[in-house]
Structures are given as structure tokens and as C-alpha cells.
Length: 501
Ligand code: ZN
Image (cartoon, rainbow, N blue to C red; front, top):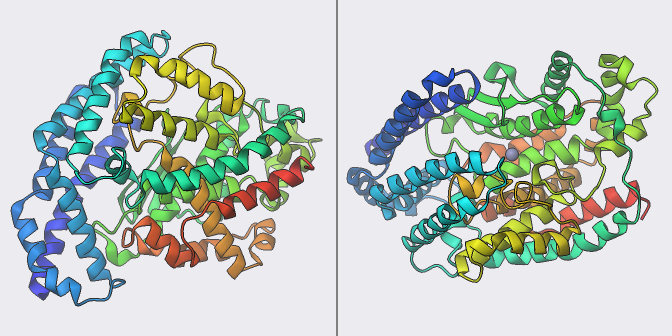
């Protein structure tokens, strides 16, 4: 069996190398590549994607995994080798279900849809997107059909980004959350929004970037095994556990964009930098799911980065960097400004509290389209209706309504949004478990020290990489199943205190 394990690691290592090479090309495309490189780059990426897919679906890999079956079943569930075989078998079985020809058809359609959307959104032209989106819906349904036996047609699509989660389970978590959030948002709505003009002065780019670097270095982002660059849409990517990169964008007239975005992406990156180094080059050297990944970006961005203890330490430093803009501003005013709750139309600009309402609207509309109870042409009206009833604000056009997010216009319908809110839920659940084990964490944060929190996350979440599924990892790390209660407790405590409810 030893030689078969070696062979498995060799095959998986080569697949990972091809995928990592593609990731370097994608990073370069998003940060440094001149526009003239676009056509060749698209071809190069398609070639690498095809090579990786061919290897991932190679029958000899399937045969090897079959041979390793008895060996795996004799090993404890938590052994690294069993975890590796499980992850490899899962990836193999997911990949062989879907014919390569269908994938190529879907990805060609997705790039055309994306091109059309880049023109349709600024023109507020949903009409031109209707036939394209109908095709996307049809292809998404066909993709789900390759995984028969599902309970809800969205389940196989959710599985792609949040393995182990289903519509039935998510509905329970989201319903609890909506019931808890609605009265809180209503109560806050009675107060005038906090004044956030202190964030809207002019903050030169270089100083913003330098301050952001100082912050994430203190949090524990390792610049010897990562770097930061600029790109129009911030993201994190990794080429190995020793090279995990983030990007940031800067708005000189909105202080929180670069700063909170940098902390968010650093949270994603610290997760991957913290994976067990022995998993390097294997499918375990990755995050569990989009929900767990997002739990780390949001834990650091919101629970830590928008907290009172955090700013009691960092605000005097920020004032030192921007004395003309911030002298005379009280730390309390700043804290209120970065936690301003306000009804808004755009998901990515929404506050910590109403953000989830935006996500749940999209989640429900996706399900309705997949179920066939909502036609694509009726989507704008359904969108406006839900914004009216759930958030209390109606978009004046489709540009800032149903056309605002790229997800449906550059990929599948189904499984695209739940990870964001799941991330908020799981982030609070992990943080509560860490603080129960180490009540000193809050005091440490107010003295600019993050090692106890970071250490707990490394030990209970990061190190496992992709060894467990989301429900398993949550159980192992917190001793409890996935629950929205810790998140609701956190929100009620924080916003109740902020708004004196
Ligand atoms: Zn994120």
C-alpha cells in the first residue's frame, strides 16, 4: 500500500501543479498583464484547465483509489492519509460525473454572458440579458441533473461551493437568522444613521496601503509567505502554502474600502497560510468550502476589525498616519461610523447587519428560478418586491437591482451566494468557541495582540485544510453543529449596545 500511496500523491501533485500554474496566470491577468495579453491568456488558461481535468478524470486514478479502498477503511477517520484518499475520491467522483464537452459548453456560455453583462449593466439593459440568463438557467439545471438522487435541484450546485450543505439545512439556519435579524434591523431603523463623514475625507493612497500592511502584519499575515498587490476587484489566491497572495483596491475618499477589504482578504490568506505544511501539493492544501473560507475573512474583518477593542488600539495609530483628517475625531465617533447600519441597494457596500438580507434574497430567488416557480423575465419584479418587503428600499433601476452582482452572469445559477452568509454564521461560531476557551482574547486585541486568537484558529480550523467537510469541521472545532445562535448573540450584543436598544 505504501507504493500506491506514493503513486497517488505523485498523480495528485501533478494535478495541483497544473492548477497552481493556472492560478499564477490568473493572478497576473488580474494585477499586471497589459490588455494585449488577453486573448493568448484565455487560451493558455483553457489549455491548463483541460490538462488538469484530463488528469483528474483519468481512469488510472480511479483504479488506484479503488485499490486503496480497503487500506482507507482500516484507518481512523481523522488520519491524514484517510483524509487525503477521501478528498481525492470525492474530487474524482465529482469530476467524472460531468462530461468534458458539457463543461466546455457551459464555460463558453459563461464567458459570453459575462461579456454581455459588462455592457448590459451600465446600460441598465436587463432585457438583453433575458435569453442569455435563460440559457444559464437551463445549463445550471442540466449540471444538477448529472448528480441524480438530490432532494432539491439546487443541492448539487450548492455542493460545488459548500460541500455537505443542502437547501433543507440552509433553510433552517437562514430562517432562524432572518427571524432574529428582522426585529433588530427594524429597531435600528428608528434611529437616524450614524454620521460617517470622518471616513469620507481625503486619505492618500500610499498612506492607506502602508497602514493596511501594518494592521494585517500584526494580525498574523506572513509577508514572507505572501504578498499584496492592487487589482480592480480584491481577491485572494494561493500558488502553494508558502505563497498566498491578496489584492486590494483603494478609494482615496472612503477610508474603509481598502482597509476593511485588506483585512478581509488577509483573513482568507491567513487561513491558507495556516494549513498543515505536510498537506502541500495535495488536495488537502486548500480551504474546506466557500462558507468556511468566508468565515475567516469575516471573522477578521467584522468581529475583530470592526470591534471596539481593536480600534482602542489602532485608532491612535490611524490618527498618527492621518492627523489632518482625523485629529479631533473621537474613537467612539469612528467606531460608530464603521458600524453604521443603513438600508442600501448594493450588497457589497451593505453593513454587517443588513448584508445577510441581501444574500438571503438572492438565495431564495435562485431557488425559485431553479424550481421553475420564477421565470427569468419576472426576476426584476421579484427582486424589487423582496427589497421592498425585506429591506424596505426599492432599486430605481435594474443596474443597482438585479444586474448588480456578476455571479449569475459569469457562472451558474444556484450555489453562488449562500457561502457569504454561512461565512458570517460560522465566523461567529468559531469566534465564540475561541473566546470561551480563552476569555483573555478581547483584552489582548485591545493591546494589539492577536496571537491567542490566531493560534486557536490555526489549531482548530486552519491546520486541517480540506481534511473534513464543513459540518464535520464545525463539530470538531466548536463541539456543536452549525448554528446561527452564536452569530445572533454576537449581533444583538454589539448592535444592542451601539444603538442602546
Ligand atoms: Zn471573501
